[in-house]
Image (cartoon, rainbow, N blue to C red):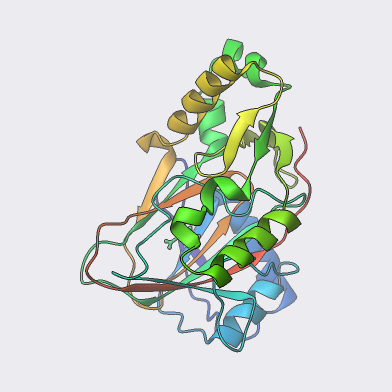
Length: 276
Ligand code: SIN
């Protein structure tokens, strides 16, 4: 396979690989090495079925079943993100996926199924590049901090609780996923690089700081990670597939395409407990 780097900080397009076919152990290792190097990989024209998508993701670890998002009728590990006038887009804030569990996902594979005529791009940012750009004084300020991540911050009753059944599902999801504390700066378990691990959607507070100072640090870090220099923007074509390292990246899906519809399928691969 070939990889073409897209920006200095993040992203590569990978060609000469067919993701609809089972991968060899050597191909999986090569992909993982590329993922650690580039943080997000893009593949063009990969029309995976939901089962192929699940099997592809399962090469890299156990899969997460989302407690709120709907899934493919036959494959529960494939989330269906079908956004339209009745279900408006909700991923237009910078976030990492599922940080509210003890062992958050190491990665995710997103497949474009139905696209608007224009718009609906997704951006990713490198939280390693963002951390590296901090000065030493700021790095030592945040070095030993921890922060809370809460499913309820993003999955609110207002947005997801339209019916009594939906509210009951949300309540069950929150009960099963109480707020989780992780380090503000985590070390990537493979590369050993360090990066910022707080995000706008799910991180609610910094445990060791009084609320005003904590909010100030959180606001600074969640804006800092979004600086354009740390990002890559992908303009989707049907059956493009993105594979991102969810440990030290964040992403943002543009919500600029209504009244058109956009359908994406996501498989989410579990990871390990973040550490300093
Ligand atoms: C997500 O936030 O996981 C989905 C991103 C997208 O729909 O582009």
